[in-house]
Length: 143
Image 1: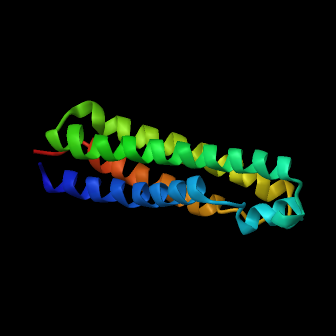
Image 2: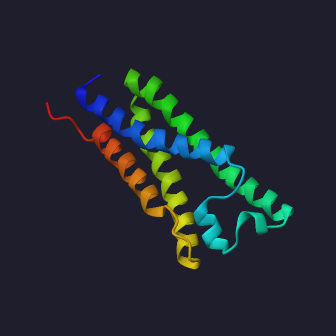
């Protein structure tokens, strides 16, 4: 595998590991994050149990999506991309960018409509990393 592809793999792995960590955090949490409290302007303990259950379900669903996308990208990086399969060169950044841009949009919406400071900017940085990795993989090599 050419050096440029190894660098692309590393670039893909950085946001993917972060996304996996966030997903695991969301799947295992027992209450919402501080920015969720800011968005709702209420402490976790003040919410009725049925609200807590609903919010935890939404958070865990987001976490499950993050874990699923992360593991999918990890498999694509370590098997087809390392084998040099061309379809993986566009599939990985496509999956990564779609998921992170849509997630950033959701967080941005909450950020703008509430007093919460959501991590939408950090999520866009992950999108940028997937774009850089994709450019490394897809840019034609001059011979």
